[in-house]
Length: 75
Image 1 (tube, rainbow, N blue to C red):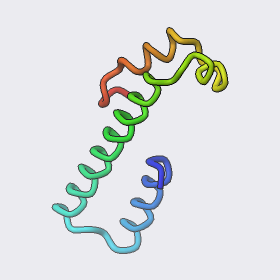
Image 2 (cartoon, one colour):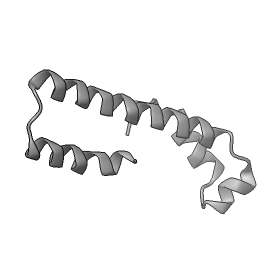
Image 3 (cartoon, rainbow, N blue to C red):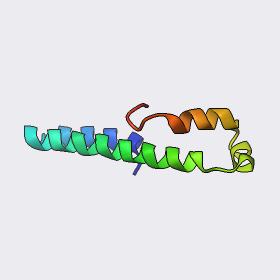
């Protein structure tokens, strides 16, 4: 499940039966940590792509390098 599909699911579940405040907070923290982990993983993978693979996905090397250097908390 991607992070874009998680937000509507969380909102739906919250509307059905609201979570206790501590649980809602813990869930939001877990979602943020999962997003950060995914960003870190994908940016590391992007940094390791060969030039021909970057061309396949339509990225120039300098653009991919710039994105790969971003910190995991930066969207």
